[in-house]
Each structure stands twice: as C-alpha cells, then as structure tokens.
Image 1 (cartoon, rainbow, N blue to C red):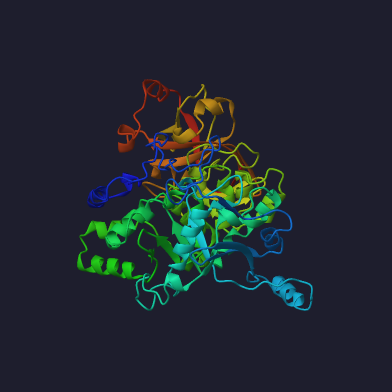
Image 2: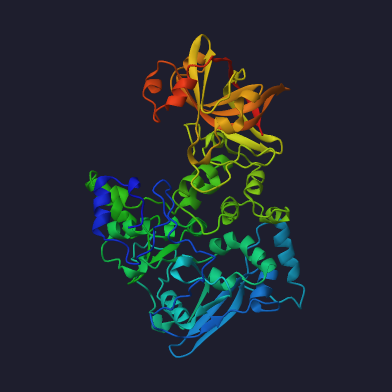
Length: 565
C-alpha cells in the first residue's frame, strides 16, 4: 500500500500488508524516505500526458466541451454561475451540453443584485441544479492539460457511475440504509448532471480559468454530493467490510494529493467509488457505526482504531474556529499530501482558508507564497517562527516558510497567534539577548547567562540556513526567541535547560516592541544537562572545539512583543 508505514501500529501495519501491494504498479523511485510526501502520482509537465480510455484497447474519439468566447461554459463563468455538464445516455446515443448552475448569493449586495435582475427581461436566467462534483487524481488519466475533453468511453462510464449513485442525501445519517440501496435503478435514469475540473475549468483561456478557480470552493459547497474516483479503489469491492474499506481509503493516492483536500472539506456528502458501488463513510454512516461498536466491544483491536486515519467532517467544526486554529487543523490535514506544481500550494491553501483570491491575482507576482502569508491578516500560529526548512528572502518575510507543504506546528503553544505586518511577524515570546561571538561561527556558540553556561547550536535540517552562512560574528545585537519551556519556570535563564529558538539580529526596542531580522533556527542546551551529554545529533569534532571558545554574554528577557522581519 502507498501509505507511510511510520503512521501505523504493528497490528494495523500487518493487516495492511495482507491487503497486498497496489495493483497499479506506480514508480516510486523519485520518492524519498525522509519526505513523507509520495510523488508517484505527480504529473510531469515535460512528458506527454496520457488520456486513458475506460477499457484497454479502446480507440474511441474525444468528447470536447467548448470553452471559447460565447460558449455555454464561458458564458456561465462570466455571469458568475457554475458550468455543469448535462450528460444524457439512453444506452445507444450519448449527448453532452452545459447548463449554468445558479449559485447562492453570499452577501446582501449579491442578494440585491439578484433581485433587481428579475426585472431585466433580456437577462438569461439560470436555476440551481442538483449535481455531483467529481474528485479524481490526474495521474489516473482523467485529466487533460491541452483541452477540455474526455474519451467517449470515459463519458459512458461516468454516466453509468453517476446514475448508480444513491438517491437519498444526506446518506445513512437517519435511515441507516446502505448507499447501495436505491429507490431507482440506473436503467430508469437517462440523464445526469456533474462538474469535473477536466471539463469545466477552461484550459486555453487564462482569464476564464482564473474566474473558474475563484469559484472552486462554491463548486464543492453547492454540489449535492462529491464522488471520489481513485483508480486503485475502483479495482476493489466493498465486500471486505469497514476495516478494509477505511484502510484502502487511508492508503489511497487520493488522500495524498493537495487539491483533493478541499474536495473533502467543503461537502459532507462524500462518496468513494469502489468496483461494486459508491459508499459513504462520513458521520453517521453504517460503516462508521460498525467501527464505533467494535471499538466498544473490542477496545484492544488496534486495526479497528487505526484503519481510518483521516477525517472528512471538517466543515462541522471549521467555521467555529479562529484563523490560528483553522491553519493548525489544515496543516495537520496536509500531512503527506503533495501536488505536481509547487505554485499550486499557496492557491490551494488560499481557497481552503477562504482568502480573497481577487486580491491574490491583483498583485504583480500572482500566486506566490509571500502573497499567501500577506493575506493572512486574521493571524497565523506563532510557532511558525520555529519551523525548519528554507525561508523566503523578501523584506519583512524572512521568517516565512518558502514551502507550504508538510509544515509541522512545533511546541505546545499551538493556540498562540502571530500577526503578519509589512514590517514583519508580530509575536510574543521570551528571549536571550547575546553579545556578538568573538570568532567565526560554523555551528556552535557558547553563551553565559546568570552564571550558567549554555551552548547554542544551529538547526540545519531540511534546508535551514547555517551559522556560517549568516556570519554571526559580524552581527551586532543578536537575540533568540524561545519556543516554550522544556524544564523549569519562566523566571530566569537558569529555568531553561534545553529548548528551541529563532535567532535574530537587531533586537532594537521601539515603543515597547523589539525589532529583529530573522537569521536561523537554533537549539540551545545547558552545560552538564542530560540532553547536552546525550544529544539527538552527536557533536562533531569541529563542534566540540567550538564549545571551548570564550562564551558570549547573554541577558534573559521575559515575554514581550517582537516584530521579526
């Protein structure tokens, strides 16, 4: 299975191995054990994309959705509607056209505008259409970077799957019925409505494409349901029960893709297509009730506890949390997810957090990571200052991670909020003020505070800058902000035995706020402590020599406000 085995207990890992390896046989040679993200499903722009047929050996033609100026799709997007594919299949003939779905007005201005349009006779009116939003992995062959099209055989397969969906929503929450139990059969239904990015997001018109992307959140929020099409899941049936179903979903390529996270978050009626049927696994489902019953009857069954390492009921709690809590939650949900294009990271997260995408585009360097951070005016987790990895080099944003994937909140202060300003990140933390080192520093700086000796050491993991690169011995007014306490009280330097810090230069105080430029991530440890004698990363001979240098003088500062640029 494609899931990272470091996530699983031994019992669950053994159970997962019994399900066998993925049948798709993907190439994982570019994946790294150090990185939790799997890149086997990334689409390589340098290689020709292969549009797959529903059946091997099929040579059917394409069905193309026109998206040029004046087309039904373009008109719907220009008017602020959602273009929906109307698919009719009577078994012999297949016809496809676009219907505009009228979105719900969100603001008072939109409601007033919608009301006034009722009195304009020449305005074409659209109505809400119950539709299914499709969620898929592009590596499975259902995308197309050149045109808005799908093979005819794929369209026929989609018609069959959509017509087989359960007709009742929300699924299982009150009825307790299995999703397979329907009130109508596929043969009784000749048409279906669905949205799919391959067909409904224009490829060859960037202006229309941007407008369609702006409405992505609404697309999934207003859909009657979301159907997940994962090639690996669709090769297996649901006969194995909830343990196998949940485990296969947890190990699927779909849960490892960045874009699919929003497709899971914004609609409660999330269905997964298997070989025999589509199944609902959300809150109140029959499968979830079976799992909870097992948890009570057999609390030592680790497979029952571990098989669903995901949660798709985010929208139940997400609206009630502040921005810091939302970002913490989404960062945890992003674990092990990746995307083919790193430029998609800020755009996708902006959609997840409901940021203003129009402001996103008005900036000259559209869809950059810097812009993402600058738009988070409601606050971000303060502990972001202590994350390892490469940082932005823009003025005022040298504290900011250059990548938004695989971020980890560090320390126990996840509720602390920092505020992004043009001058830097405003945070409140205790700190040490340091005199400059008397010699060039590569990694270790000894310093003395309150009569006790400490060792400061650069954390260079995952691309973080080193002490040698920052030329610490040439900088004045050094300081490092301290993330939390490992031992002791927040009263004096002696209370800190080991910890993590953000090293800054400057440390100048103006009107009660200290200003500093972010330099690097560091750890510090008190001489003679257990951690100093048994470090996670042993000291090299060169670092042992640096520990013998004359110590810098340090002054401990209690919690106060900083602006880190």
